[in-house]
Amino acid sequence: MSLYNAVMRRCLFALPPETAHRFAVSMLHRGAFLFRDADTPEILQTELWGKAFPSPVGLAAGFDKDAEAWRGLVRLGFGFLELGTVTPKPQTGNDKPRIFRDKTTKSVINRMGFPGKGLAHFKKSLGGKPHAPIPIGINIGKNKATEEFDEIVADYTACIRELNGLADYFVVNVSSPNTPGLRALQGRAALSALLSAVIGEKKETVPLLVKISPDLSEEELEDIAAVVGETRCDGVVIANTTLARPDELPKDFAAQEGGLSGPFLRDVSTAMIGRFYRMTEGKIPIIGVGGVSSGEDAYRKMRAGASLVQLYTAFVFEGPYFAERLNFQLAALLRKDGVKNCRDIIGIDSAAYMR
Image (cartoon, rainbow, N blue to C red; front, side, top):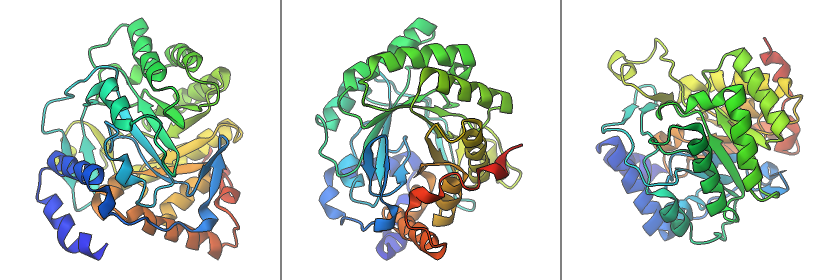
């Protein structure tokens, strides 16, 4: 960590954000052997959907879009990885520049638009069912050019059919703000039809989740909770990046279009987790994401109702072994409160978030 702070972080932040990201992915892919295996406290071991997680702290989708870095990532202390978003056909995404960092607030705005090498490359890069020591989820999306609803459904089901047997869970991404029309799929009728079709394609033993926006109204959140229950979806990921722009952001940075991630999303997503947990009576597992930059942040999200949590932006700013450090912070908080296992805190503060 000290080497990263002294040398690598300075070098990477001297590069344009997307160039730095490509370099990091390449290092994790080609130089996986350079990274030591991180330690994980036993108190963090948990289980969900019949799968064992060495830690409830995972890496969110967006970092390893083409399944090229997972061999290195599994060594860094994450309890699970979510790869993607993958789309059926290769696409370039939105015009560059499309990633913007603000070092003063440790925030990121991106308008990537699901760039990637497509389903065939993703499957090949995953190398068959990876013998990874941690669960690997796959986040799926539609191509930008796909506009008709039947074709949109076909995009998602194609991903499921091609990747069946390779994922420990799937996530249907309908919440990125950077693909035109995508968030409209969160509407009750559209989401119900989409999830029903996708669930019909997957293997019965593989959980399927839906990733939702933090910018939903209370009524929209209630509709999603109802659809998830009706379709027997296996869980939700709360939440994606936000279109909101807090006043504390530098004006030039805030003026960029795209989804904001980082500390300003933390409280919004945590409150949303708590409300969804109460709406569904804790029956629908939640992966909490948004602004996780310390063990305390992860702790609060789990107490609000998240069974697992994810990070991304803090990983960019804090370096490769940040997940390991966060794991030990979370374990210390559990021990301080006399908790025997992280599962015991899920949802105990959820009532505080009801409106």
